[in-house]
Length: 110
Image (cartoon, rainbow, N blue to C red; front, side, top):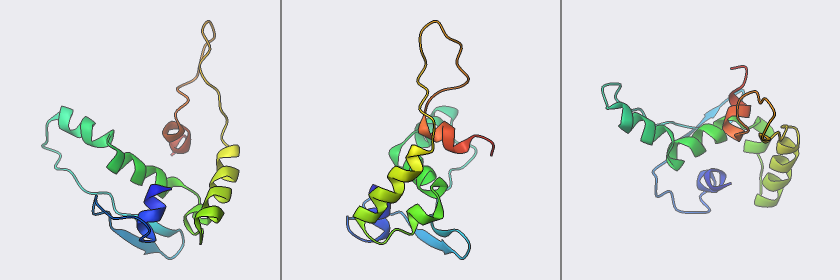
């Protein structure tokens, strides 16, 4: 929701996120590049930061969610989309297949 609000200039863009419009998939956020020569710990910190993870999640949302015209419409669209994702938290004593993170669920099969 925060990234969508930045896109629509409803909140300050303190992280200097830039967006582009994909003719087929709607608005997308540019992910800032990181030099591959950076230390692994720096790369990990960057990949796990809100500024990167939020943009990755935003870009993986369905087009109809990103194209929402109001906050209320966004919440409804986002709620419907999230209802389609299985919620399977790990249970002690049972074998699990992966984790239950939203990011993992959105990147499965990619």
